[in-house]
Length: 81
Length: 164
Image (tube, rainbow over all chains, first blue to last red; front, top):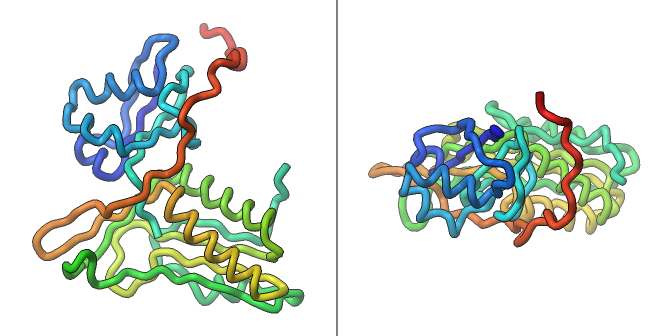
């Protein structure tokens, strides 16, 4: 199944894209998706501890199961205001 | 169940924030107070001179989170109307990056709600600030938003339509 991945802030700069479509296996969780996305971009991995994930515009735990068509954002610490 | 507060104004913009108009628009005849917060671009950060800032957002989620904040205000404070606008893109020193106005019959609720709104926005709304200095740029230190530690996926997910 296909999910959409969004990158923001320094992650967008490091990943070189703001958005990509990724094919994941059934039963994949958000942490599997991050592992896949960072496998080709090792520089993303060192930010993992400070990231939070969002699934369909809501904060989500890393063990959340993905469903086809999900929009997953990897969010660095927020600094609005 | 949430009520729709049709007089609220929750927006992201790439233009100058119309703060005077926002403060005026939240005011109704039953209100005795309007509290506002004007967040503006400071000319220094961590001892360095800032040239300008750039803001970006996960726009759809940021708007959803800002609306949640407004709903929370209506549920927990005796307030009337909320206006909350955050600017994105390049901002110069002294410009307003976020403006919040809250009206209420009495001042305490307006102050408290306005303070809650900006504090929560800074912690939970997916917006990012890049600071530009004479000798480089950095993404501002931010706050890690509270996120669930574990999912509720032990439950059976809702049935999905079979794919073709």
